[in-house]
Length: 337
Image (cartoon, rainbow, N blue to C red):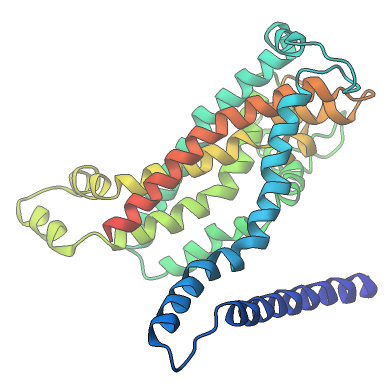
């Protein structure tokens, strides 16, 4: 354990040192290639402009190379791989795409992803907005926000382990240690294996992501609410508007752009959800989503790189337009300020 910590710290220090050395050396080389002679004002001006034009690309060069190697190349390679068989050696054309259309588990995964998309972003945004409004009206609001934001610091696997104890089921006459079953039993109900209930188990898994991401939505929306001019709120109060009318007709329209950004950000996260399903059910009981199906086809049962590549492309095709819109909306919001 100690050796791993020392190794990690050493890597961080070495990485920072190498980056600083690269920037220093590249700037020195840039100065040598484009010198600024003191006796020639025209040449000095031209070289300074050249430095200014080249320096950003020189500094961004390593990051751009890494993006090409670790982002662009895998996308191209995955697209090509989707036309080959499980071994990646024999060209099969559109056979993997035909399989995806006809496969029942793939269709079930699509349905589950749509279900997650319909519930999780809406619930996180709604709860985040309501909590942001309510906590701004109480003196201990900052403490409440801190507690609600705290799950964001927990990994998806860690959160899933916590919620496994909430959904825990003990058979026979054993005492129920799961919080949910203990409550159900206390009010006279029968304990259930909640995560194995078809269809409804998806909502029990969604609750975990909602619990984690509500804090994110709350923080962003709370900052947006504080940016609403007080004059508009005061004018609405003077005109006799109720608190409900102020919320829906004054506050929400003015922060609609931020709400959309929060919604789409969580939507992108939902499309890539993997850890929660893997930890809680491993895709059993009709809870499989696309990311888990891709993992299963790639790494389990001998692996099928062609079919897993098709699923990966479906996920990318779903995420990319939303991500582009989200970036444009965020840039528009920043430009507006």
